[in-house]
Image 1 (spheres, helix red, strand yellow):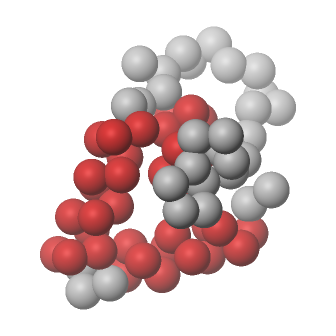
Image 2: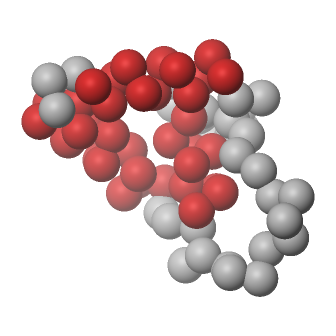
Image 3: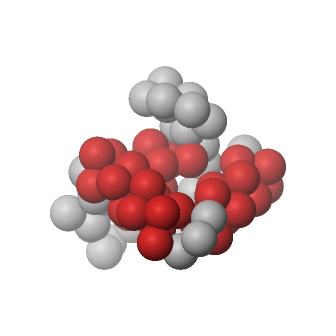
Amino acid sequence: MRDFNQSPKARFVLDRGNKKLLGVCAGLAAYSGFDTTLVRIAFVLGALLGFGSALIVYLVLALVAD
């Protein structure tokens, strides 16, 4: 789970080592401390149930994050 004693300089970055597509879900999982598979499932469900809004969020994060 997430370690709440992280330094204030901890930030979200794309995880290109564990990526499947662009590394957004792997980066979010590493940042939040959740399992990568759960984050990916949440994004797929969000894309299907949210009429593609999670896909837009995914693409924006891929473009903005380092």
